[in-house]
Image (cartoon, each protein chain N blue to C red):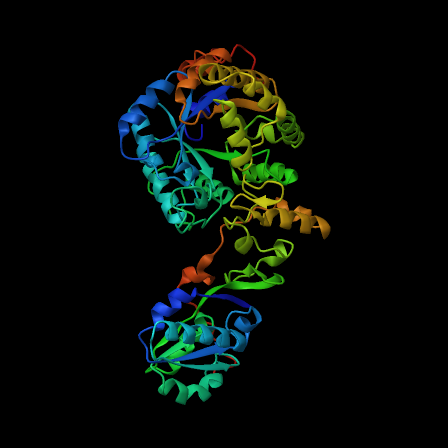
Length: 222
Length: 325
C-alpha cells in the first residue's frame, strides 16, 4: 500500500492560516490503514486546526469529510458542494489523491496535509517499511523475493557493497542489508547459484527515468 | 598489453607492485596535489586518486589525474557510480584517456549520507561490476554501453575493489568471481588488519583459480594512533581491527612514537601479505598522511621502485626474485 505521514502541524497551519474556511478531506484506503489520513485522522487534525484558530484569535470554519478512495474521481463526486463552499481544501490523501481532487475540481485550491512516503507494508504496530520502488520491471524472482532496487541503499544488483556488516547496511545500523536478506533467502530456498550470475545494467526506461509514466490497456480502452 | 600502463607492465612482469593513495584537496588548490605528488613520486608505481572520497566534495579525480599525468607520475583514477550515470562515466573515461590516464578503479562509492552533502540525490545507475564490464567493452570492442562505435581507443587497465571483511563472507568470494567474469584486471582490497580472515578469503580465491586471472593488490592503512584505530573499528563500515592490533598501537604511546609504531606495523603487514599466494602487490592508503608512504615502503623492503621500461627487459629488477607471479 501507499504509506504516508501527516505533515507537522506548524507546516499545515502556515498553509491554511489565511483561509476563512477549510474542508479537510481524508481518504479511507491506504492512508487510513497507515493511520495518516483516514476518517479518524481527519477528526484529529480538524480539532487541532480549530484549537489553533481559537488560540490565535482567528475565525475559521473547519469542515470534516472523508471519501473511500480519493484517487478515483467517482468517489469524489459527493464532494462537489463541499469544495465549492470552502476557500481551501486540505487533502489528507496521498499525493495521487491530492492531484485527483485538483484535476477534478479546477476551481478548488487543494493543499496536501500528508507527506507521501513510499509503497510498503506494516512490519509491526506503528512501523511501516518500503518494499517497492515501482521500477516497472519486476526482478523479485531473481533475488529470492527481496528487492535489491528498493532495499539496497545503492540499488546494487550484483551483491553487497563493502559496507555490509553483521547483516546491517552501512547507511543505518537499524537497516538490514538487502544483500544479507537476499543471501539468506536464496540459501533457504536452495538457489544460491543465482548469486554467481552477472546482472547487466538495468533498463530504467520503465522507471521514472523514462519520464512520467502511463499504463494504457488497449484491450480495455473504449 | 591491454592499456599500456606502467602498473600493467609491472604486474605483467611479476613485480610486486606498490600503489598509494592521494586524496585531492577540498577545493581547487593544486599546490596540495603537487606537494603530495612529490611525496609519492619515487615510492610507489602508481597513485590512486580518490573520487569525492567518503562523499565529501573535493577537487575532481579526473582533473587531479591530469595533473599527475602532466607531472610524469602514473595515476589510478577512482570512479564512483554514486555521482555519475552511465553517460557521465563514459564521458569521464574518454576525458581521462585523453589526458593520459591508463588505470581506472571502478567503485560503487560511499553512500552520500556519510559525507558533507547528505541531502544530495545519488545516482547508482549502474554498479561497480556493471561499470567494469562497460569499460571492458569500451576498450576491447570500441563500443559504448549502448553499442555505439567509439571514436578513438580506450586503453584502460581496469580495477575493482574487494572487501574480504564485509558480510556475508561467502558473497565476498562470489563478488570477486563476478568482477573477474566482468573483465577486471586488478583488484585493490579494503584495509587488512584481520590477517586470518584475509588468508581465508585468499585461500578460497586461489582454490577457484581466480588469482591467475586477476592481480590482487592487498590494501593496508597505517594507524596513526590508538584513537584512530578505535574510530576506524567502530565507525568505518567494513573494517574491523582485531584486539591484538588494537593492543599494540595502544601500547605505543602518543604522537610520534604511536605514528612510528603504526608505520612499523604496516610494513610488517606488507611483508606478511607478500608471502601469501595470489597477492601481487600492495595498495597503501595513508589518509591525509602521504608522508608515511616512504618510511613504510622503505621498512617493507620495497624501495627503490623499479622503472617499468627497464623492468620489461629485466624481470628481476626491484623484485628480489620473490614474486609468486
